[in-house]
Image (cartoon, rainbow, N blue to C red; front, side):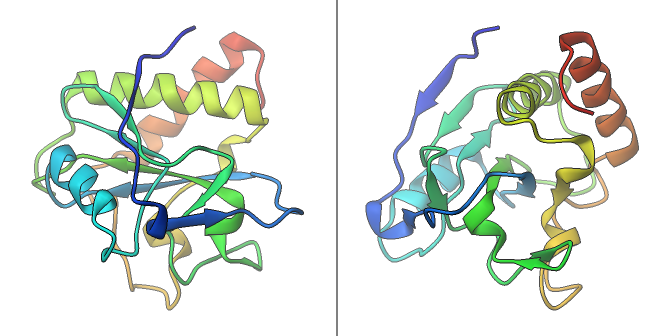
Length: 170
């Protein structure tokens, strides 16, 4: 499968090198709280101090602000399985979301599933390592994204089905 991914480089002050020993082992999901265009602009602002590897827009377009081999600054203070600093060993995906009460558009979720399945298969990332910002933020409750409009149960089942069909990790 070949995904169409649009380059939207973040400002170099908003990401860094990964530690040499880092093995990418998780995907962290966020929501933008605004439009994809505003997220791209914010990541390109040298004063923002934040970035992500991907942004999936409501229309299904996928933007790539930070190369996967770099440390995007998306998780902040974070921990998963007693391992801190998720920025060092995860891929950050932002979902365009301007209304936490409205469901995500089907085209956006389809693109997200394509992207997540491709990353998971290539990087051997299992389903239980796909988590939201709310699951890893320290202190607990500091972040709530993606909010209640993201159906984790449905999403992880759909992703698992795609990975199984590809023969990838579950």
